[in-house]
Each structure stands twice: as structure tokens, then as C-alpha cells.
Amino acid sequence: MKKSSKRNGQEFEPPYQFWHEREFWSDEYVSRAMTFMQRHLYRALLQAAYHCSTRPYLPNDDDKLWLLADAGTKENWVVNRDAILVKFELIEDGKLLSHKRLMRDWTKLLEYYGSKAKAGSKGGKAKADKAQRKDEAEAFAAPPDIDESAV
Image 1 (cartoon, one colour):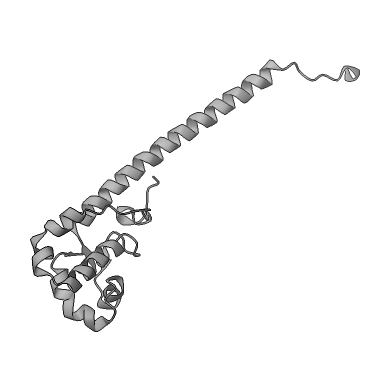
Image 2 (cartoon, helix red, strand yellow):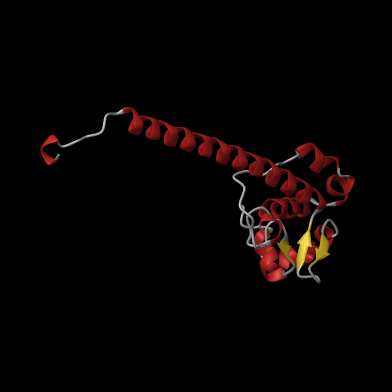
């Protein structure tokens, strides 16, 4: 994977997201303290974090969060916000929200795709080197094309 000027591989947008349903429901706060609406908004934010412009973080901005959370209205977001945001940590001087499990999974995805990119690069280089050697061998194996009349 190429090195990025963005922090934490933000140029990378994964084709899929790890989702651990059992982990989600085994969190007692999520399964017992959150209402069904809060769980929906929380889940939507966890999924949106992989595809928003600040990935894998979320912007700490209610005007963006209510949309990312699929809250329907900003008012619905504001009513439920506090119960959801306790699951996130403020970073970057309070501008972004980070989530422990998301960061763990993001790191795993970057490592996985980084290893696949490296393996693909090695395979491509080996194939190109082999083709180059074949071309060189064929060039030296064929008799030179000499125009007898020019001699």
C-alpha cells in the first residue's frame, strides 16, 4: 500500500467492514441501557465511520452526525446523542470522535490490504522480470537480420 499524507490510511476505503454482531450485543450498555433508536443510531455511526471523509473517525459536528446516524431529524439526534456519544472518545482537540473497536478493526483491515498489495506487487514484478528475460533471450537467440546487398 502506498504511503499516505493522510493520517491512519484515510485514503483507503474498504470494500467491506468487519462486523461483530455478538460483540455489539454483548456490550451491556448497548443491549440494556440504549433504546432501540439509540442502538440504531449507534450502529449507523459505526458503519458510517468507514465511509465518511474523516474515516475511520467521525466528525464531532451535530450537523453532520445526525445525517451519518440516519436519525431522520436533527432533533431526534439531539435527544439521543448523549447516550450514544459515551461510546466514543474525543480526539484532535475535540474535532473528531474515535471508537476503540473501530480503530482495532481499521488497523486489521489496513494490515490485511497492505499485505495483499505487497504480495500483488511482488507477483507483478516477478512476472515483468520473467517477461523481460524471455524477450532478451529471444532477441539473442534469433540470427541477426542482415541485408546482404548492403555489405
